[in-house]
Amino acid sequence: MPLYIKDPEVDKLTEELITLTKTSKVDAVKTALKHEIANRKGSLSIRERLAKSLQMARAAGPFASGDHKRETDEMWGED
Image (cartoon, rainbow, N blue to C red):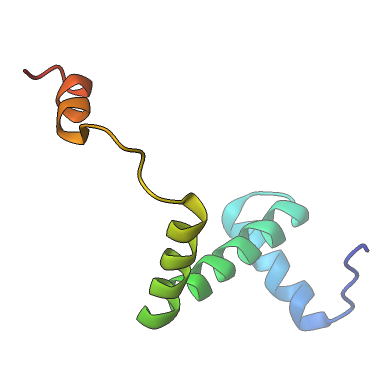
C-alpha cells in the first residue's frame, strides 16, 4: 500500500531534509526511516540483543566438525 501523508509539519521536515541532503523526497524519507530503524535497533536492551544473537546461533546450527585451528591457519597462509 502506498504511503500518503497529509501533514504540514511532515512536509516541512521533509523539505528541510531534502535541502540538507540534496536528494529527492523519496530518498530523503527512505534515509530518515532507515536511520530511525537503525537507532531503534541499536537501542535494544542487552537482553533483547543477546536473545536475538542466540536465536541466530540456534538457526545456524552447530559448528561443523574439523580442525578449526588448522583451517584458520590455512586461511591466513600460516603454518
